[in-house]
Image: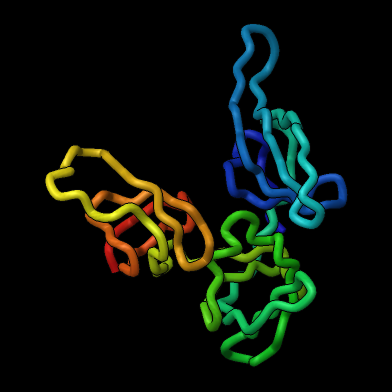
Amino acid sequence: MPKINGNEIRPGNVLEHNDGLWVAVKVDHVKPGKGGAFAQVEMKNLRNGSKLNERFRSADKVERVRLEQKDMQFLYETDGMLSFMDTETFEQVELPADILGERRPFLQDGMTIVVEFYDSEALSATLPQKVTCTVVETEPVVKGQTAANSFKPAVLDNGVRISVPPFIAQDEKIIVNTETMDYSERA
């Protein structure tokens, strides 16, 4: 594994530190008036979700870990565990349902997602950036309501509440950005 200097750490980097795997969530480069510069790094443990604030000087060496990414297909959920299948080897992997966090409702049957592995251990899962959903409940379209940036609440078929533009009607298919959990466009 490559070692990098403490000042080369960027958000999203996966590091091996204190016998654990950590992802850098937030990195602040600090140059105090007295003393050497350092990087203040907020990290999250990939295995148990605990957080840690650590200070790395530019002379400090830290192991940067490369995770292997595989496209996997969602099969089913049982007892809080999500089952995924590798589309090439047909090997199956189970991950806890809370690994997707608040984006869990956007996971649909047969959806292909990206699972990141360290050796043979599955650590994280990422949904596609855009998912098609159906609006099941929203206010009716009001004629003449064309004010810019006016949004109305809507409930999607997966139970998630988002804001949609006034021209979106009930039973209409829309595309939702899973990173921001916002309306993107009509389907």
